Length: 82
Image 1: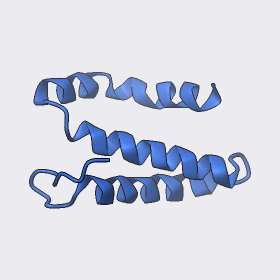
Image 2 (image 1 turned 120 degrees about the vertical axis):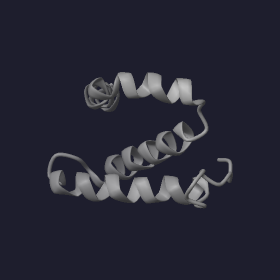
Image 3 (image 1 turned 30 degrees about the vertical axis):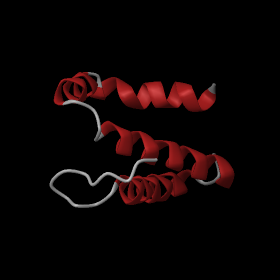
């Protein structure tokens, strides 16, 4: 992954991805009986990578993602089940 600093924060993409992955993993920990540990870690890392990659998108593409924001949980759920 690139190590470009994220605008306005000074944090690099790798650190941001790890931060998001940690937060997602903690959120999923509440469902530990339904999700095994390796799946939880993988999903968290994917979420972190996606969140980090979004910071590189143009404002136009970021707005497009924001427009489908409400649909993202359902899409992510379908992805994990596939």
